[in-house]
Image (cartoon, rainbow, N blue to C red):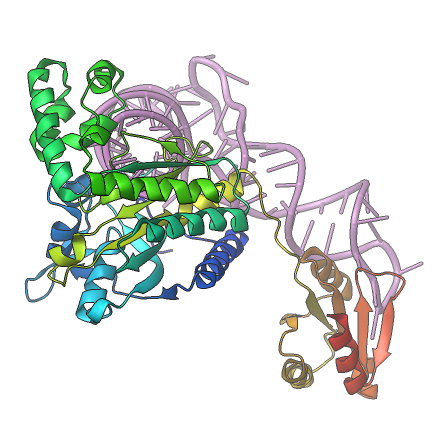
Amino acid sequence: MNKIISRIKGMYDVLPDESWIWQRVERIAEETFQSYSYQQIRFPIVEETQLFHTTIGEATDVVEKEMFSFHSRKGLPLSLRPEGTAGCVRAVIQNNLCNRGLTQKLWYIGPMFRYEQPQKGRNRQFTQIGAEYFNVESAHADAELILMTARLWKNLGLPNIQLEINSLGTSQSRKAYREVLIAYFQTHAELLDEDAQKRLLTNPLRILDSKNPKMKPVIDTAPVLSDYLDEESKEHFQQLKSILDSCGVSYTINPKLVRGLDYYSKTVFEWITTDLGSQGTICGGGRYDGLVELQGGKPTPAVGFAMGVDRIVEIIKDLNLWQQSNESKTYVVVDKSVSMEFVYELSERIHEALPHLKLFMNQNPTSFKAQFKKADKMGAQFAIIVGEEEVKTGMITLKSLREKEIGQQSFEFTEFINYMNQQH
RNA sequence: GCGGCCGUAGUUCAGUUGGUAGAGCCCAGGAUUGUGAUUCCUGUUGUCGCGGGUUCGAGCCCCGUCGGCCGCCCCA
């Protein structure tokens, strides 16, 4: 026997006992987005590394230490995408989707890659579904986007998830706040932990997010971002809140919610669950008005989010929220004496006439007893019995496995088709 | 990247101070030859994650490695 090569760390296989959950999540997401007039966009899994540096920010953990990077054969630095927004924005610019003030509502789904220490709800390859709304500056876009996510949770039937929102202000006001914050932390430098020291000059806002209890006092008395918001951002945030209020979407304002990617401005939000342990964010997003320009496009306001499909599937499994619908299957019980030519000729005629029927053909006929046992175990509704008698008469014998009073019936082929069509 | 716990049959797990590898479930076959549940009988299954070391002898002790889980961190 050869050595078995196993899956690499942080990657996973989705097996049939679970894939139906993924499919249903994806289907519901697609339907929900379509109902808000979003269209799907697909873009590459591999991009130039520089795209992510520019978009996400040099000082972020994602680009500093979490990318799967390599070189093309010609030496160009490439990376597997660690998130979707960078590539989506690139595609929008390159294909002129937002020229002349055109708005775009786009959604995507696909694998993302981050080189992290895996744990529950955190894999190195993971699936995100995201949406981006381009070229609407007002908070109406932010609000609609958040309302759409709220509807998605409702459509998925997810309980216990809470919305947190915050405003980071325009890039100018954030810059001003940043200066104040750095100055504040510098005067209390002795209270900062090693991590915070490192971040002080690169990404001071993230210090606010620290869970280190020793730093809680310094953080609690730190200047608050909302005090430094410009009028425009305050107004924008106010509008968002008032729409959410009027639609009955409850939220908490978390002034320390800053998010780890540099491109956000004004609105940021997260949907959080307590059912997953420490990886509790199932969806996060916000506004990124400067990003399109940063990537070389024309100034284009935009807002978007991404959600972790892995985590949502995990919740559905852990809480046992969904039952697999027992789709009607029909098992073909074959007697050993019957030629396979006969069996396949028959089954192909059935497929032709009943394209939606799920037929399970026994390829390896054993005893009737064993075949019926198998049919029962896989939850088949019907068994079609093909034995010497059926070959002789050309009739189709159908047995209802779930309704005993119906029992076994014999049909001409066309009668059989009619009967099966009436079943659903 | 750091710290802790863990890895034994398809699966869930047990395995004593180091002394021949175990159970339930599942699976396969059978209980008057064309028919499912239950029950009963019979049976298969392992490089004990992998590699090295200590030992007369290692599933058990030591080292390394790979993988999983939990926390930090990060984020979806």
